[in-house]
Amino acid sequence: MQAHSLSAMRTSAPPFAPGAEDDVFPLISAAKSFGRDQAVYDDGDAADCVYKVVSGAVRAVRLLADGRRQIGEFYLPGDVFGVELGERRRAAAEALGETVLLVARRASLPAGPEQGGRLWRLALRDLQRSQDHVLTLGRRTASERLASFLLDLAERLDATGEFELPMSRQDIADYLGLTIETVSRTLTQLQADGLVRLSGVRRVRLPRPAALAELCE
Amino acid sequence: MQAHSLSAMRTSAPPFAPGAEDDVFPLISAAKSFGRDQAVYDDGDAADCVYKVVSGAVRAVRLLADGRRQIGEFYLPGDVFGVELGERRRAAAEALGETVLLVARRASLPAGPEQGGRLWRLALRDLQRSQDHVLTLGRRTASERLASFLLDLAERLDATGEFELPMSRQDIADYLGLTIETVSRTLTQLQADGLVRLSGVRRVRLPRPAALAELCE
DNA sequence: CGGGCGGTTGAGGTCAATCAATCAGAGTGG
DNA sequence: CCACTCTGATTGATTGACCTCAACCGCCCG
Image (cartoon, rainbow over all chains, first blue to last red):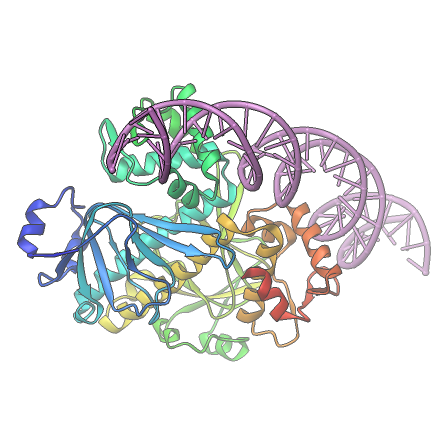
């Protein structure tokens, strides 16, 4: 991993979310690169930084004692993550592939009331997503989970046509509360139904998004 | 439903959470009573108020088109709820039984930077709880779900010995992503194992909380 | 060409859902 | 006080969606 100048990052940055909350990040944040599966932080670490994804993607991981794994969220380019209530991390964050992040010390952030308000909005956005996730995990079937996952991903990557899955089948399974085999089977089923088209294991096209959305009700 | 003076409510209020975020609520909030299953607000309503539970309890409900129901959260005495990012409610809120709430107009809240900071902390607390919920729904078995649910409830009601379940079996099922039959069976199993003692359907005692906690890992 | 890793496919098992009957408690009316 | 009813909870039998275990495939890279 290597440090880059901020300006270099800005210019090389792929799709940034255009939201006003971008301004939360101070101009003096450092950029940092991470390799595949590299930890940004671990469960239990001091929560003294917040991060913004410039390129690549990150997963938030929680583990049960016996090794069962749940991914709480994926963070895509433009997303801010790492804001916590307490002193300590309650989940690990790991890069999915080659990933570049902006890093800001937590202390430098909520100084002004303006900043506070924006952080608050970020927290609420995460909360919304987490609540949607609860509905999916609590009440949806495997194919409904996959459908809502793919639609959400397509929207966040604002993919007009095809897009690339930033994560492995195992990551998808651990996000959706399924096994890797069920993800694979369900995906081939969706493909057979003409709702998904895979070209290569990670390249996805959603030919009938409306039909997919119907699956999610 | 009837209005009460704030002072009357304050004095009659059961366990208030002692957290600093209590001060978020302006002194000039109105109290309002709700009956069993009465809606505080519905999905899609304008999100112009926030609420604090004085007594009773509230459930946050989301519905799929075919009627499947997921309870996102239960709000107990002392809890604040109803803070939303957008203009509209994304879930309904319904009283579990006779319930008294403090109501504050949203506009009157985040005025000062102090208040903003406190609302932000509230949002983060909800986020934490929601993330825990995701782990439970994604990766835990029925008995683990019940165990963590009961422990969480006992702690929030700070029940030293016995406590009363504010919600029905159906509500528990819809919170834990199970069916009412599975909740019932699992509860009797936990009782057979000596981890739970039920006296009447809603009166619960947890004789070995440590053993229950072990179940949750 | 061979080995390794991630993904897919298949066969069989399991946990929780479904369908259905019974039970317990609260309220009602005779 | 005792049927009767209504609602919510429990229990039982069976089914089914997803998991587990295992083999196989395809691609990349040495």
